[in-house]
Length: 159
Image 1 (cartoon, rainbow, N blue to C red):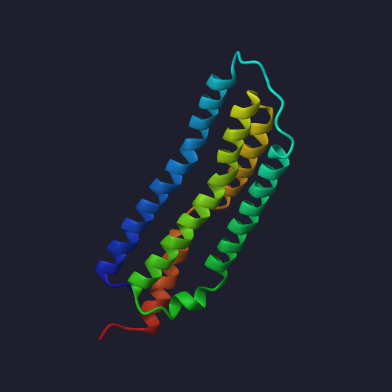
Image 2 (image 1 turned 135 degrees about the horizontal axis):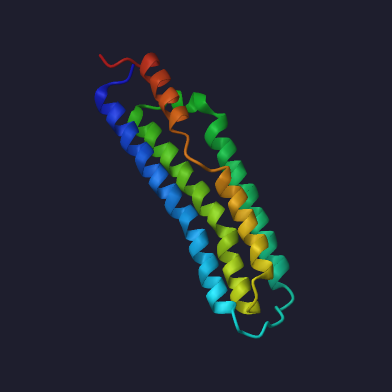
């Protein structure tokens, strides 16, 4: 059983993480509108050769890094349970979460650059799709955090 103060911390954190998550996700439709407005009516241009493959490679590396961070984040729950306290658990959970969000945002931002250089939306959809996949697998998991915090509290009772 968690202390009421720790319950309040976890509840506040869950709300904050969901708000941050939805803010990042809501940016993607906004990007789509911007790309549509900027590219509409403009003459498409060829991309300089290395840009598309380079940006696609960077996007895939960001995706791999995101899944690596996520595996480090979720796979080693024991290290969370051995943390010095709930504040350390929350800090670590938050750090990993924001790193995952930032890495999930990389492909769509690179896609914006490609769309603005080419003045067409065609390639941008690929980058948007990669980001959507990454965000779909990055949602906050407050239930997992609560379980870890409860396990930690059971192992390290407050005296």
